[in-house]
Image 1 (cartoon, rainbow, N blue to C red):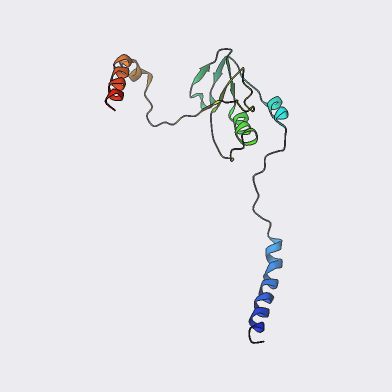
Image 2 (tube, rainbow, N blue to C red):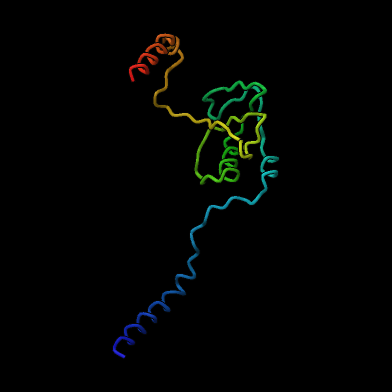
Length: 143
């Protein structure tokens, strides 16, 4: 009997607080719309040829072997199609035309950009890329 009184008090405290908790909605969970792979593919808007990336960061010149998906389409492929968590920010995706990106062997290249390490076109024109390649090969041989 001596242990029953504290147990009843604890149960009563929980019962008093439960309704208050029940009125508080749970935090919203990120949910993606349910759709089949066919519906997802049909909703994509592939872009061919010359494509300007968001923010005018660069221009892609794609031959007929590849197409570009916008950041929104890319996010849907990554989240709905490939099952990645939300929040991956990209500038888009380049996908081979002959491949279904949602198939088992499907793939794509994520386009992203970071300012660090940027080389201006003027500086890039002064680089001896042949020498850079030789240096890299020599370093690789040493390793």
